[in-house]
Length: 483
Image (cartoon, rainbow, N blue to C red; front, side, top):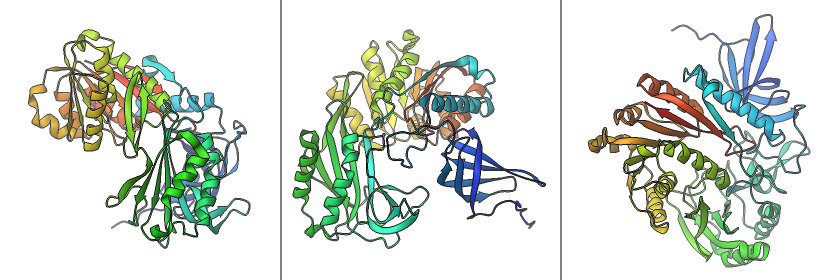
């Protein structure tokens, strides 16, 4: 077997310092190492042109390397100071929002040109929709406990009781949140240090990642923008539970947040895996109620700790409005017909279309059974008729229901980040719908699917971008395809 040729520039695991010169889609900064042998490209996610960064080499190929960001050593001249604590979830918070939009728009449209083979994508561009709230837009946050913290002054790890976020690129190290990060609720985040102190005083240990032991694991908060209420979930192991007074903790949260406290749940997670809700764990209500209500475009949605719900509801309203505008642009193709809402989640888009169209039947399909349960309850709560929801794999559903072929004029698609499996996409194309409105949280997979749709007689008519997650590299796209 021939020996794989290695590059002469960097090795896997090596720590390097590099100047970022360009920006590629998905928040990948591009640095270059130049020598007599030529130019070697280094990709570092969550970085910006003009930054000098420290990064660890994760993959080393012949012509390029992929790295993980460890630290920004020098900021770009475009960045400005903000009054928030820096966290891994907001790598671009110091970049003015107009520049964030510019990077997102240019890099996304170039994907459709390169991968989707849509040469005139700029001519088909409809609009860039900004998030109504640029800061404090999230309605959910997960804070992790850790027995290993980070000393920001000396830039080393330290044994201490920590509550905050994981240190970037280090799975076993926490970083205390001392104040508002600018993403979630200011009152909650300014009080995380007080909650940390309360928990530390109990004498019970926070989770130790490498040892896989400890009592405190996660503190999860959901917020309703409609009612301003907060729903809390404390995740612990069962080891030491008899020494922890859950009722007293609930009283302490009420002391801090008053009437905003909707409820406190307690989850037992004894699994060693790194996720908040264990597959085998229990969840019980300690105080108040276990759900909050959120409103989207005049419809009410009940949200539990486990429900999937848009993280930025104000921006989701803008996203759904654009989807519905595209769907109802030709109202004849929707009124008195069946609209298929595939990968429908909790059925929000279908419900909005049903509430605005005449005598339209919506068929919603999603593989997540709990999301379909929520969809049915929400439709009932909003008194919307003509909706049928199925908990099924989209591909299998289309196989088992051949009666829909040539009967559907409009399809709504909103798949997960991985996009649509090629076999499933073929089945969707075979339905022979006149038009599709395709929503994506990963334009790279959408651009790939675009090439396939064009080959099968669809034309890309319009594309809009919606900024659901300011200060991150994420962008949502809404594309209208017609035959």
